[in-house]
Image 1 (cartoon, helix red, strand yellow):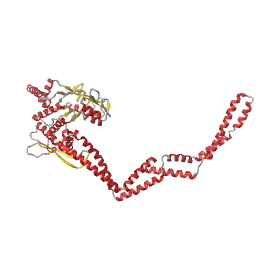
Image 2 (cartoon, rainbow, N blue to C red):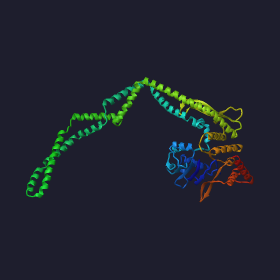
Image 3 (cartoon, helix red, strand yellow):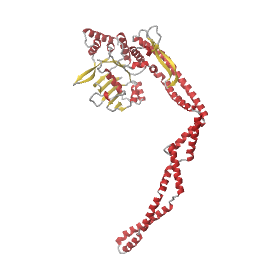
Image 4 (tube, rainbow, N blue to C red):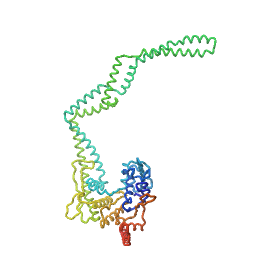
Length: 552
């Protein structure tokens, strides 16, 4: 469950620290006090898009932190499968820091993406916003609700459908390529044969271009090399070290100290003689054959032209060759490959059909139970005489979710036929229908925390009382956090929080605080009587709270 919410510098909130409890947590406050900002901060922590405008005026950043306690073995295991490992006490902290140009989300100090965060938190928390009931106007939502109801039973077959659908669509694309006109196929095959032949006849080898480039550079600079080596040879030849050696040797006969100089000159003469021989030999071995040069230039041109047409390197050209040969094989064996693909498609279609049929039967069977439970819940929510059904149609195509299209049908008046939900229900009725659905799903799913942002929109009187009882029922099974403006719902609170605006130092801030039992009654009186709280209103508030406790 969600234990704590901490908010800093968000919109009108300078600082807010909330410790939620088990059961039904109620948030109330005057219009414009910032009730939606509180729960909006939860959405932001879970990855909703944020803008710089959300940062409180004059501050550099906004910060939101959620503290969860996860102790159920099933949840701990599910989180492990998502590579989330909890400490022994089961604490899970989600935080988000919103800055001027970016934001950072963390999960137990590990930076996480919004997509990963959504996958993780969907196991822990479900938020129903002020306008979420409007999603009931769309048929796709109805099938989604049914699948949520069936989640654990249908997951294996839905995975098989998704896998088979992927294979089937790939085969469809392959089949489409077989229906090009004959003339285009012939032209393409002829062109591919030319390209394959051109590449294969070239006999390309890895590393050949580099070797040829080295030889080409040598040929291009051949004259310069010869001229430089000739001058070097001449310079070595005119250096008369032999004469210098003879004179020093004569002097060394009379002066022993000249021995080292004599030896150095001897070594130098030997080195120069060796160098002269090496230069001469190198020049003799140089081959600047014009025909060989022309051959190298021609081969380099051929390789580089192929690279320009089919790839930047020899490796890429050879890869292109293999791809062209495969495509040519398809074109040359068109009829056989088409037949084989048709067979594969038929097998894939039959398997997909079988899995979709299996899923459809599971959905139709479960829908009978689902609509029965929703109808019972609607009766509890003051729908006096209601008929509620689910109508199935088959799509004319497959989808990764099967081939079903499902729609809720409803009649709220005796004798009237059922009609599509979106055509009949008003805003207040949609809100109650969504609550009924949430009630049913709360019995079947295992999400520990449900958040309702003004689920009571468009209802009052006896209906409001029924809604409050339904929320109380859900809160026995789950932690419920609810923003409301109705006293009937607020009276049911296990934990009641007041959200208000406060002015300090010429600045307005939204603050939130938990109410005591006595303060709960006063807040109920405010909801009942407005600004002026009379003794009668206060008495009514006390009675309402007393009755709510008895219903627990």
